[in-house]
Image 1: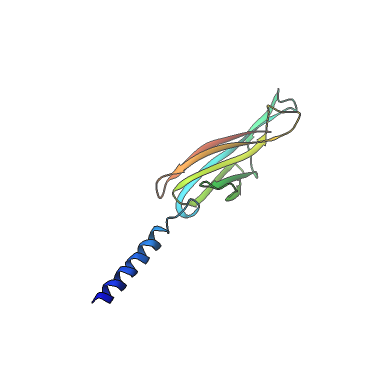
Image 2: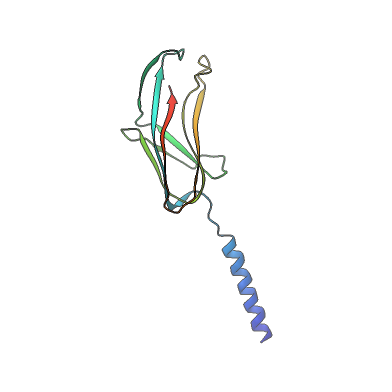
Length: 135
């Protein structure tokens, strides 16, 4: 009887450790969505005259999962500038697109437009509306 209790306790301990270590991190594998549209404002080389503005097709939008430092995934916008990161789990995310930095026109430095969001519900849909970049 003592051996049976010892084995039972060991199995329960192993299961508890296994279950507690299975907490899912932000990323793919869920049912939530982050979506939006990419909008561009095109300026002259000095960034003083707005030449045009429109939704931007075929441009990359990036996502970073949780506290990671590297891009988790990227997607190209559709013909009307929309994008959607699907099948995400609960957690924190950073979504961004890259344009030009209008505060340093002579350097032509890229500048990212970043949104930080948190998915708190299993089937949540977060609409970022428009991500505006300058070109």
